[in-house]
Amino acid sequence: MATTSSPAATPARPDQRRRRLLGGRPSTSAGVAALVGLVSAGLALGVAQLVAALVRPQSAPVLAIGSAFIDRVPPWLKDTAIRLFGTHDKLVLLGSMAVVIALLAALAGVAERWRRGAGLVLVVLFGVVAVGAAVTRAGSGPFDAAPSVLGFAVGGVALRLLVDRLVAADAAAGARSSSSSAAPVKGSPTRRSVLAATAWVAAGAAAFAAAGRALGSAARDAVAARSSLKLPAPATPASAVPAGVSNGVAGTTPYLTPNADFYRIDTALTVPSIDPSTWSLRVHGMVEEEVEISFDQLLAMPMTEERVTLTCVSNEVGGGLAGNATWLGVPIAGILERARPKAGADMVLSRSIDGFSASTPLSALTDTSRGSLLAVGMNGEPLPLEHGFPVRMVVPGLYGFVSATKWVVDLEVTRFADATAYWTTRGWSAEGPIKTASRIDVPKGFAKVSPVDGGTVAVGGVAWAQTRGISAVEVQVDDGPWQPATLAAEDGLDTWRQWSYAWDAAAAGSGPHTLRVRATDGTGAVQTGERAEPAPDGSTGWHSVSVTVA
Ligand SMILES: Nc1nc2c(c(=O)[nH]1)N[C@H]1C(S)=C(S)[C@@H](COP(=O)(O)O)O[C@H]1N2
Ligand SMILES: [Mo]
Image (tube, rainbow, N blue to C red; front, side, top):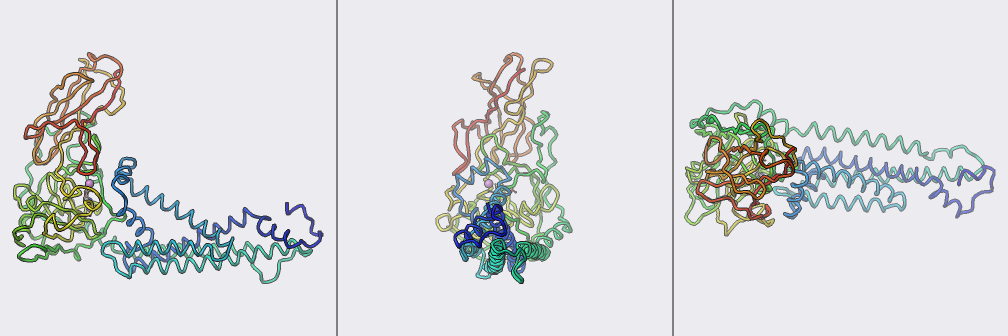
């Protein structure tokens, strides 16, 4: 439209001029404003990252908001996220946050161009949310507000200066196109100069972010300390893994889960980085004597090695949130013995450095036959950072959310009546003994199977009932009778057990069939077929897969 008016046209009336300013080159000017918003947000986050590296890494705005969100997420949403995204849930959260932040930032740019101050309102609102999130996190103080306050202040100033120049450039361009002279008004900005300034701000944002990253040395210290750590030999080694713990069915989950494949579930958006030289464990509360243990002191204590299968309460029937490892650590019973719990205490509230907590029955930790550990080693290596370096708890028979505290720094001896753990305040139960479970790993659901010589198809999987052991596994085909499966060798009561079943698929006939599994624990109790959701204390029901015989 604007191009139809010749330079020689009469000067535009004010209403036409207005149309040119707002409507003349609407998309590009709004586009530049959106870009200015994005770049200003980048500068805000870059500055905040640098300040956070100096104050506390967890206080960076995006991490603080994400962590606060995780803390406030209702159990059903946590469940759904795990069901949909598995252990990629944090990546999905960060990705979604990036999209939302980018949209808000672009909106702030466009809003500021539309009306001076409108974009700044958005910046201030977002800054307030970030500050609120940062100062309400566990273990945070007033200084945690600094990254967001400084970051958003600098970002807001950049937004205002750049948008002011953009508006001036548009006004100058409008004046030019309505006057007979096409020469730029001297000294007034052009869109090109605004874009150049924006590019400089973007470079500054990147530089701040990079400096923040370089300064964030805690992570590097932890990584370096871990790689130079030499684990002591166990005073009480684990027995050798018995021959025959594998069921021989290709595709079954390996008996020992490699660290890299071990499921990871926690509320930590960034993995806590603990330099072990700064780590200590405090044992306090209802005890005769408070105990404080440094990492070197812990390493000097006699170590026990044992194999334990960890399981997450959020595991769905047939799900993969379970893993089996060899753990090396100090028995918790001995440490509690030094502190001497007082009569009446029935719970230990363990806390991690990032505020997570778990309520474990005191008896599960003092019972020397249970074998609860303050673990430092996992499958022959120091704990991986994401699995709790330098020290975590491992308690056979209890779901992770009530026992397996990673990055543990504090044990408070207390009573279930007096204290509540992280997930219990969010609707999950206070205690969490692991329920008997069994899973079909092979064949996969919806697989096409072809009977081989003899007409059979190999079916295989795992079953677990930590502390009770597995005494039988049975398989049901369609609505037929339950048939005994063959159990692989038993390692211990605290580890899962593999099983196999040679299914006469040829006799079953070609077409669709359903395979179902159930286990019997060491007490003789048969796994219940009644369906229960993971919340509040663990799923139940029989796992089944549908397959088609070719
Ligand atoms: N610090 C901390 N420890 C934690 C959690 C957590 O969120 N934070 N989650 C618990 C839960 S729910 C489980 S199932 C186990 C999982 O341990 P893993 O990630 O090593 O498999 O860790 C437990 N320990
Ligand atoms: Mo869990």
